[in-house]
Image (cartoon, rainbow, N blue to C red; front, side, top):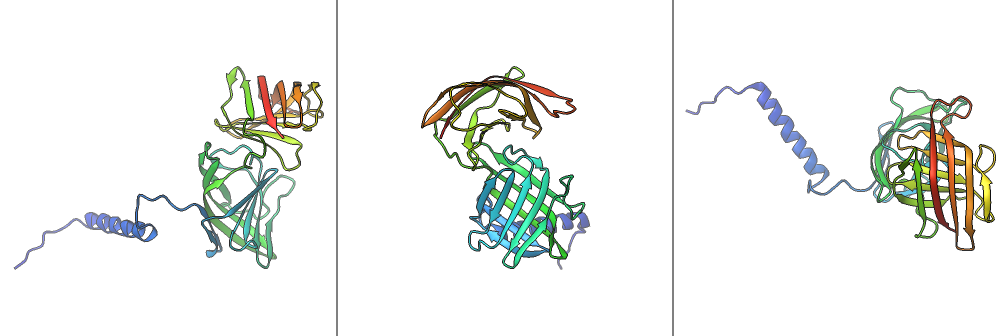
Length: 287
């Protein structure tokens, strides 16, 4: 007659959970060594809305739109404060739109920049960044309006490009020091769509921005809050506005513009509590 030893219930529970987890892994990925597919998965009120391994990403002045490559009438649109300066963690989300075949569901921002449909679960989180490849992965959970009804939009994005690809010469260069310390190496430099702003993304997570006409003649110019504007955004997403300094355009032709610069930036120009000194700056930008 077979005899069975008494087994601790906790051991049985652990074994059951272990087997269940292994089954889940096998169902999701037949080879655990293969990473999760790139793409976008979005649910609206727990109903699958988008599942696309090759979504289309659009970027502009502080916004990001992830669009279903199969059905362009489906997309999620995020308005962020610092899309040019991507860092891990929860992002300051201004508003969000969900585009459906029947129209838009909008969560517009009010004067304070907050989402109107308040929910304690609202968040947009970047979990990982590959600065070299300019991709990011994360998830979001935001309640949005669809007509008179609200919907909880929940989703994940994996290895999505987080900024414009370089739109000018691959020989773009950028160097500077912030409070005496060299900034990171240049990852990407480009003009914004209106061709009025230079954006330099650095591999330490910081970025430097200039409002500058690409046809600015050779000469020296003052950096201020109303004239030639400059900004430094650190790796934590804190922005500093240039309040004083100089920008010298050394050369400018049909192919590129080269300039040197330095400026003092305040985190709040009306009531500053912190400042940075950006010195020994120099950039070369293709057109």
